[in-house]
Length: 113
Length: 112
Image (cartoon, rainbow over all chains, first blue to last red; front, top):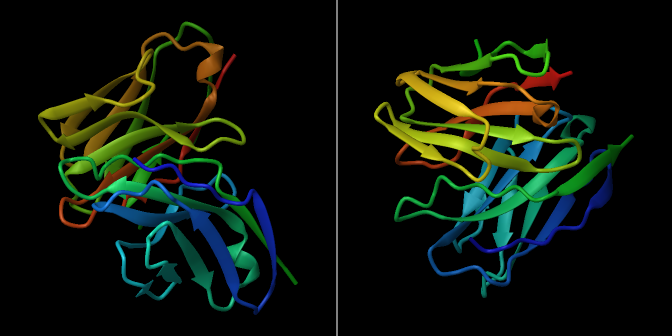
């Protein structure tokens, strides 16, 4: 699986958009980008995933660059409850490899009042 | 009610004791997983199961064993607990058409 690089921490003001970057320059053609978050010691929570098109759901938007070497998770209106560690994970979605989530250290997003 | 439940939520045990952590899910998923998390680190995969008859080792399976009693139940055992198995343990499930994983609330295990 491709390795990802994320900043260790970021701050965001409550009500503003939070934009979390992720680099995955070695991503291969059949690998998806997944985002999870973990609120202090709770179980990780799935947020969104994508292959090459931008994706949006009720939680967030995912923007993947055309060359697929990087992506950005956007929380459009961050709240204090969005304070968490955000993990960007690249994993295959075929051949039985889609189970493998390799969690790095992620980005600690702190939303400030 | 939670889709993925874990029992116990907290456990303190002594070195050498056998301990079992249990996981149940109501999502109807075939795939289940056990992870551990050490302070300040990401999750690491211990074991995973794609169905009741399928058990596979993850990256850190030494010192652990698992049992898939039913589609909905997946247990993790520490046959002889040691202090460096002190960690937060998470169970997760996923389907076979959509692969996102759903995690339980975790079990905080302390081995003294």
